[in-house]
Amino acid sequence: MPAISASVPGKIILFGEHAVVYGRPAIAVPVEQVRAKAIITPGIHQPSGSVLIQAPNIKIEALLSELPAENPLAATVRSVFDTLKISHPPALVIRISSTIPIAAGLGSGAAVTVAIIRALSDYLGRRLSNEQVSNLSYEIEKLHHGTPSGIDNTVTTFQKPVYFQRISDHQVIIEIISFPKPFTILIADTGVPSPTSITVGDVRRAWIERSDYYEGIFDNIAEVVQNARKAIESGSIEKLGELMNANHQLLRELDLSSQQIENLVQASQHAGALGAKLSGGGRGGNVIVLASELQATELSEILKSAGATRVIPTQVR
Ligand code: PMV
Image (cartoon, rainbow, N blue to C red; front, side, top):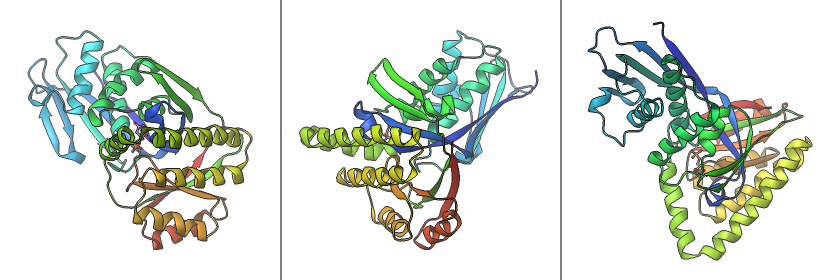
């Protein structure tokens, strides 16, 4: 049996993070420059039925049987076997690697999960549909942080820009968005890791205490998302930039910004960027900046001078 691999892009949320956990819409796009990869090979020197998981980036090399149920890699492999009703798998090696920074709002957890599900089901000759892949990885996302919206697993499974809204636990709206005009986004890393589980938990506690106030902000974010979709579909790049600034302001009101984020947002605004906002969980991770093609190189340097540890330019289309 030859090796089988799957490679899956990272993602950024353009609009609507956090509010999307509370049933509002959000827009996210794949980021092809950073990827997670899973390679499955036969375990020729292993006893039958044994599955070896190697993830050198996070220093894991262990048999599936030795890993606890809540380990997301092990849970992913077990969920594929359960879905395919495989009780005695062939001896396998699953090797996972990723260039997606962890805890930076680029969807590394979801991309690793989707890569394992795709490679393993293909290796076993039982390709799963996009919907099955996305649903399985949604269950694994719950291990990463208890109440995911599902947008990460959706965009990494479909690998297309999506408009996403969770209506209920079992019902989601997923619409692929088209960009008549491609535009350039700079993804600037604050260098501060910020686990999504913490910021999502903080927002939840604050929402429980002051739900009317928070529901009001989520509604305002939803309006920004709707207008952003219109701006994307009509190619109105200036309008899109204004909406990014408005979304950032609302995220600040949710207490999700930080000094490092503000340094990057303000530096890009002073340099004439069309818009800028934090992306993903917040308090660290990445800032996204909308730039004209002419501005992109100069703005990247300005962002680095303002503290960005790395800047990834990406064309959204
Ligand atoms: O930090 P990220 O990019 O994985 O994004 C989290 C997005 C949230 O809306 C904060 C949480 C979620 O599950 O949608």
